[in-house]
Image (cartoon, rainbow over all chains, first blue to last red; front, side, top):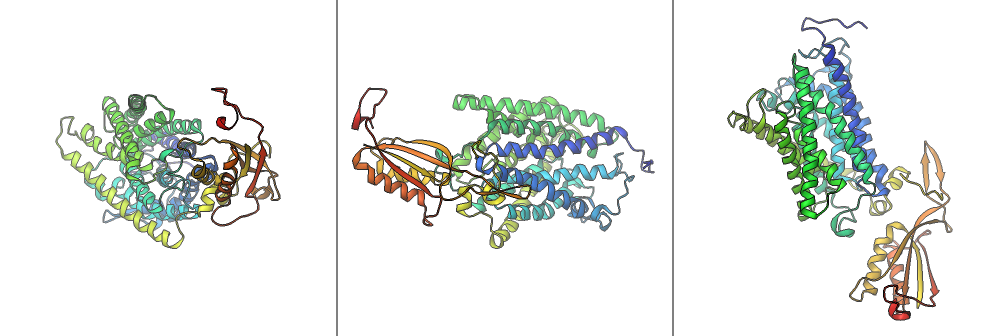
Amino acid sequence: MLIQATPDGAIDSGSTAWMLASAAFVLLMVPGLAMFYAGMVRRKNIIATMLYSYGAMALIGVQWILVGYALAFGKSVGGWIGWDPALLGLQGLPADRLYGDKGIPELAFVMFQGKFAIITPALISGAVAERMKFSTFLTFSLLWATFIYCPMAHWVWAPGGWLFERGVLDFAGGTVVHISSGVSALVLALLIGKRLDYQTTSGGAVLPHNLPMTLTGAGLLWFGWFGFNAGSAVAVEHPVAGASASLAFATTQTAAAAAGLAWILIEWWHHGKPTSLGMASGVVAGLVGITPAAGHVRPLAALLIGALTSAGCYAAVQLKGRFGYDDALDAFGVHGVGGLIGALATGLFCFVPVAGLLTGGGPEQLIKQALGAGAAIVFAAVGTLIIASALKATMGLRVSPAQEREGLDLSLHGERGYHSELV
Amino acid sequence: MKLIVAIVRPERLDAVQRELQAVLNEGDQYRLTVRAVEGHGRQQGEVEYVRGQPVRSRMVSRVEVTIGVNDDYVEPAVAAILRGARGAEGGEVGDGKIFVLPLDDCVRIRTGERGRSAI
């Protein structure tokens, strides 16, 4: 099909190519996340843990086409939610229609945003790993993506969204993706309760079964995050998308590196040894922290944001034991806490499109960032509480104790991740 | 002195350890060796699915617990393993087996002690 320039402007081939590549990058983060999480569980739960992520990839992949995009990016209804019947099933969306003034086909934007909708519920699965029913997780993901994620994406990213119009900055989803999933993960972890073995084995922690897999997953996340952050430049900026994408790329790299380094240095000092799980956790924390700020801050500020987020998440993960909830793989500790630090740091360090508190501006942007974060925390917490309580009363959240002891792989999926050679 | 070798379900290992701890505790850590083993008894392996085809593995995974005890402790230890390995829901085919073997001698490598006190 020949794509023709519309009156809005010509198609920008560079932006379009990078948007398509970025969408694929972000999809690769989902297998990356599955590996990152699966290495941290016991070997009897590796299949179940990975299937939470792959389940979201398939299910939300369908939901996004049918209703998700229309709800998130359809015509704004009072700033609260999008709606456009023509976008249901993408029926009324011709392939040559451009998205706003960004110079890219809207379908490329639909795909890019769809990957964000997929990874967000997958992030939540880390809090409930090794005990949540697969059927309930799928149902939860569908309801959560539809009633929590889509409205929130609309508020922050869609023209007309109430936080968008107030100038809240969330470059690539610190609020929409990370605060929302982290807070929801905490609520879900509290509702579902601890794993049976949470207290009995080795003083609270449940030992990971394959850290090399976790490290590989963290590496894939780092790679994919360039699409997540530098890809968002195309959705945000035009005609300077290339400059903005390059800035976001540089800050993403800087923050991840600084955060990985910060985490192992802190634990080296604190516990005497630098660990691989610390390196992986630090890298992911830094990537979370820079997400809202990626295209708004300078590389040196990204270095501070990465280190700061790493330290904050380290503290949150250490303190988890004191509060007695079982956020199994630290979905709240890393994404909730890291997302919040990143959202606020954006208000301190941003220099485009406005100056932040520490870059010559006033406190206005910091206040806006706090408003955005606060709205996300309240909405995600209340929404998750309602959805999860309803599912707890109807489908049940947990597998039976016998299934949990046997392992979810065999009891729910009829498979094992690893077979002995004798079999 | 007896050598107790028990083959139990992996998911019951924690409970077996707790029960043994309760009867063998003399103020220090009791001694235990654990191995992952494969095999079968009267039951067959679990049914798994490979692209829709049901497959029953020939072997099942179990945990083998080995523990050397002095004569006074044989019955309490056997009873403890039974309680832990059977579970609250009652016994099922596949719960495993306990073997009690005579044990001629025992040597603590660090000190060279032998017999009762080395166990």
